Image 1 (cartoon, helix red, strand yellow):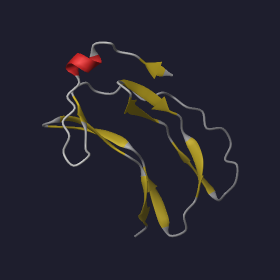
Image 2: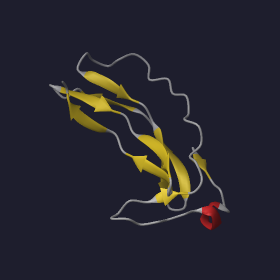
Image 3: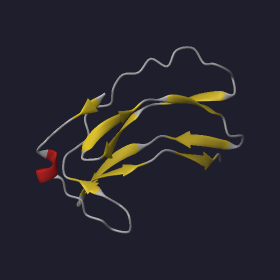
Image 4: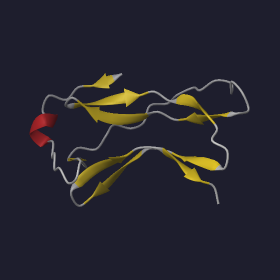
Amino acid sequence: MKLRRPLILLVLLLTSCGGVYYMSEAPPEPQIEEPGERPSPNQVWVSGHWRFLKGEYTWQAGEWLQVQPGKRWIPAYWHKGSKGWRFFPGFWEKAH
């Protein structure tokens, strides 16, 4: 699902700081997903999230990923700071 907002380009605050971009408008609320039954014990569900691509927020659907031994998944998220909304992608982190 794509959420088009023609005025977002006027409101968009694309401040580049070393390849980091900030949006002035918050992303939409996350969509509710039904991941279904776990395909195997070696997989983990990674929820979908909003990305800002080509001037609009676009939903990236969740998916099952292969478990990384000794690591845990840190989900993607948006954070509002003094410059606007910034996206942080999900990643595997060494488990403690």
